[in-house]
Image 1 (cartoon, rainbow, N blue to C red):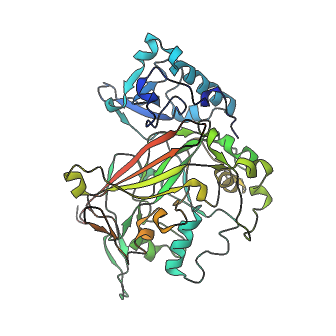
Image 2: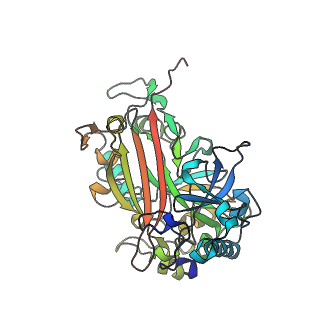
Image 3: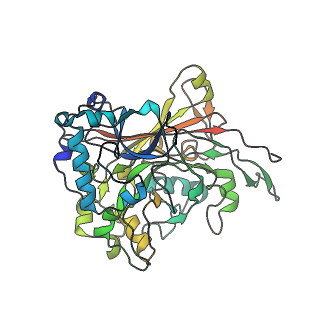
Length: 427
């Protein structure tokens, strides 16, 4: 686990004034990485930046990075990552200001963010036990969890080409569904479109084909976390998912926040890993004393919805639910160890989705499928609108942050996406 050092000191202040605002997601204790281009740039080339307050520090212009290849930077060893973080931290602290560094700043309002790295492979897990249990009860009231759930992290391989960055809209998907009472499926727009509140886990250092990663080394292979919305067409999913799992219900779009909060930044927000009484203990390759001591990362999460009507009236939307990563059944290290135990080789930029991160209470649901009890009980919004599933024009915003006494609050920014009408079948 990454040790706490001088970069985490809650008393640190930055010469970038906005970073010292207690409400900022991006104080000098955070320093998340992303890729951006200046809106006025002639060549439109992507550059590596670090978020600080309401600004972006261009690492190459600041003389702090020799590459503009984020995937190459993510391959660094833990020691190299720690050294880079320390250099950036010292440069952005109050005493570090220089004319050259100030010239390397660009306002976030003046940049266009891209996906934070080139994503090669994408695996979506099912680590949220409360989501798995609630959804399982909809279909198997007496046996919501399959017998393997508490023994291994369940996952499937997804489609990386349709992952888009926060702020982009996407078309309502079209697919086959089987209407209630029908014996013949129909092709048309999904009527049960949903979001999923997840975290994205970014792989940094690769492992060789055939070389499993031990659980105590697993987090050395992880560069950091982001917010992730795995949009889901529940009606398409219900018809297609047996026997091989999700396909068209999941591969039409997924939205990712633009900033990677590094594992180093998350060091103050660790918690012990435990299993509930009566549950099986993990097999040895998914367990260790160090992992039990601090294998959990405490990230608090929120889902907000802004309907088209809310947007027209100037409303920023309303919060639908809140939950946390501490409720997940499987940890980051366990996902990496299990993914590689058969010798699977991970590469820099590979992405894991955690699966929907719901809490134990109904109000902590990470999807509309849960909040509306499978569409049977629509939720009522503050302006009188109702939702069982998403409608065209709806914008879903995910937010996340870490907060703990004795540590500076850090955030993840936003993961925002808007539903557009389905494209006509003859288009």
